[in-house]
Amino acid sequence: MSNITDLEVQQMLFCMYTVLAGNSILIYDHILTLPEEIAFIWRRRKALPAMLFLLNRYFALLANITSLVADFQPIMSDEFSCYKYSLYRELALFLQGVIVAIIMAMRLYALYGCSKRLLTWIVIVMFVLGAVCCAGTFGQYSGDVDIVPGVSCNETFSNSIAARIGLAYVAEFIFDLFIFILTVYRICKTKGKLLRLSLGARRNIIDVIFHDGVMFFGAMTLTNIPNILTYYSGSVGITGSFCTFTSCISVTLVSRLMLNLHQTNDTGTSSTPAQDDGPSLAVLTTRIDV
Image 1 (cartoon, rainbow, N blue to C red):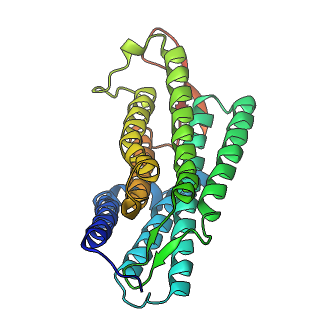
Image 2: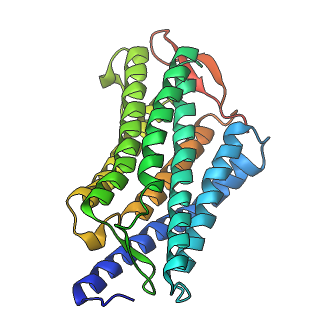
C-alpha cells in the first residue's frame, strides 16, 4: 500500500463526498417520485419506453448502491480486487450513459415524426461517440495507472491516461449538445418563434419537451464541464471525481423527463400528429404508451 499524504487523504475524501452527494440525490428523487412511477408505469401496459424507464431507474439504483457499499468496505485491500472493482464501476457508468442516450434519442426521434433519415444520423452519431467512449473508458488500464488499495480503491492517472478517459465525457457532452440543438431547431420550426415558448408556462406537450430539454441540457452542462475539467486541468487526486455525481444527475433528470411526459399526456411514447393551441399548426406530440 502506498504512503498517503494529508493532501491525498483530503482529495480522497472529496471524491467520496461527491459519490455520496450523487447517490443521495438519486435515492432521494427515486423515493420522491415513486408514487408517479407506480401510477404511470407499474399500473399501465409495459411498452418499450416504460421498460427503458425501469431499466434506467433500477439499473442505476442497484449499480450505484453496490458501488457505494464497495467504496466503504475494507475488503478491497489487494491490487487485483481494486482493478476488478474499478472495471465494474466504469462498466456500470458506461451502461448508464448508454441507456440515457437511447432514451434521449427516442424523444428526438418521436419529436421529428419518426423520421428514418434522422434515425440514421442518430445511429451514426451514437456509434461514433460510443466508440470514443469505449476507447476512453475501457482502454485506460495500463502500467500508467496507480491503484492505491485499501482506501476505497482510489485511482490516479498519468496526464495522457486522464486525457484519454476524459474524451468519453467530452463525447457525452457532444451528444447532449447534438440532442439539444436538434430539439430546439424542431420546436422553433414547429412553433414559428422561440419567443412564444415560455419556460414558466408549460401549456402543452411541445412546451414540456422544450422546457425539460433546456433544463436537462443546462443541468448536464453544469455537471459535465467540471467533470471534464478534472481530467485536463485538475490535480491527480481528484481526476474523475465527478463521474458518479454526473451519472446520478443524468439518470435522475431523464427519469423526471419521462414522468413529466406521462403527466402531461398520460396516453403514452409513440408519435401522433395533434393540433397546437396556436394558429392551426400541426405539431407532433409524444405519447407514452405504458
